[in-house]
Image 1 (cartoon, one colour):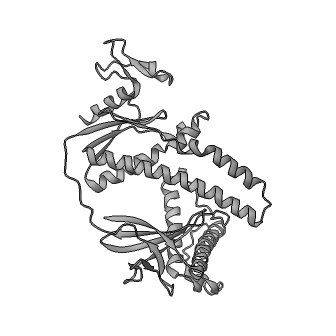
Image 2 (cartoon, rainbow, N blue to C red):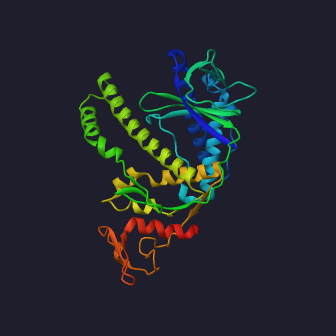
Image 3 (cartoon, one colour):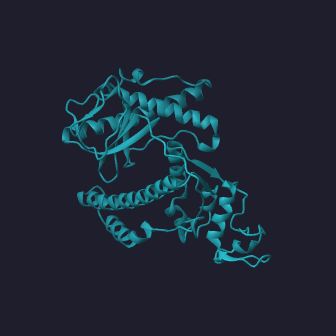
Length: 357
């Protein structure tokens, strides 16, 4: 099984210049190949089979960087085309902008060209290894690695490793999860997890930094310093959100054999402009993705409730359906048939649990 491990890099000035060249060349070859394919299709009506090697004669500076970075840019372009032809809603491949402050390139391990030893990682085409903070060890064969630079100016390497993941012992417990905005998740076993609202807690500070950034002259060093402050705060919020979701998803996977979650259409829910900001902040889609791949790793079962399953409108005791909870301000479900009074979110989680039972 393939698993990625992400570590912080501390490159020196020479290594940073090499990374900048790789980022730029990978972006250039992607855009150039995409542009030539579009032009060739307009002229002939046929697709063009081009490769990075065809451009090295006209652009000799492409030889200065890792050739595998260019090859992987071609792989990404082909993947973008395949995704478009598979599903038109994905959209046609887009050009990469150099104004986008997140940069990355991918290289492959060929007979030990990528390896970590004594706090340093060896990368192809680089004379000296790069200092890395390897905060956790791994066992297995390195297949590839992706070097990235965040808008905050930090460097990371994501090492893709082919390894064996030991599955957890099977257990009998099952749980239904109802996610929400007031409380992030309510479980059928009675557990409740508050919505941390990391963005809301940092909004005043973020607004102050963005206001300072808007007042700086474009192209000045002070503007770049202000941009870095905004980027670092955004990165902090993102890290806080990821940490919360990782800890919660791992806890649920370890403690339950079967997990039932709703099939939420988040893209449609974001059309509600009053709640779109809160829905984006809470990251339900990321939480579901984490549960799904961790369940696959550790031998757990994920059950997705049908989109038409009205978990919040059904009585968990008698099964009667009532539309009272369509009003989001209604926090207590009162069954008109059996008289059950129960918290609406807990009631929904119990109904989801029935799908596992």
